[in-house]
Length: 109
Length: 113
Image (cartoon, rainbow over all chains, first blue to last red):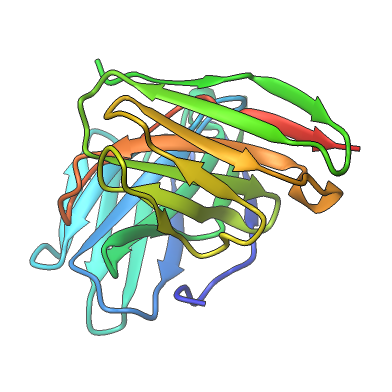
């Protein structure tokens, strides 16, 4: 496997709380992407971070990338019920994008 | 806005039958991809294409063929469907750069009985 974490994880938190999801990868990459997939839909890119960036922010989202430990994280602050989704990390390597197993996030109102 | 359309949305097939899943993109992207999604496995790449006439094997190509007759269209073909191919299939398009964003369709739910 090109990913360190293969099992789908599930998190359930109260609306308003902050959450952080992590993933690690084994193969060299220059870009890590995070996608969000809502029920019945295809995944959609929410944030992209390059190897020369340690942190990237977009609204309530914050992504980090540590190339030395080959790990990335996605944090969401002040979660909303609409953040309920499956979140995937993905990396570009060997001329294609590979996805991790995902984290199923449920926000309880 | 980027648009990737898959058809059909749902499909029930019999074991041993032929199934064709279709994908159309209006983004004028060079690259197109077929993934399958199963609980616990995330998205796994089946086939991809760099442009019309090209198809490449992904990570799990066995039992699947692909066809890219034009820039806009990319099909996934199961010549002899098996119950293990029951899954949700997603098509995506991308620009082909190292930082490309993938634009996904809404998926096709395939059940093989």
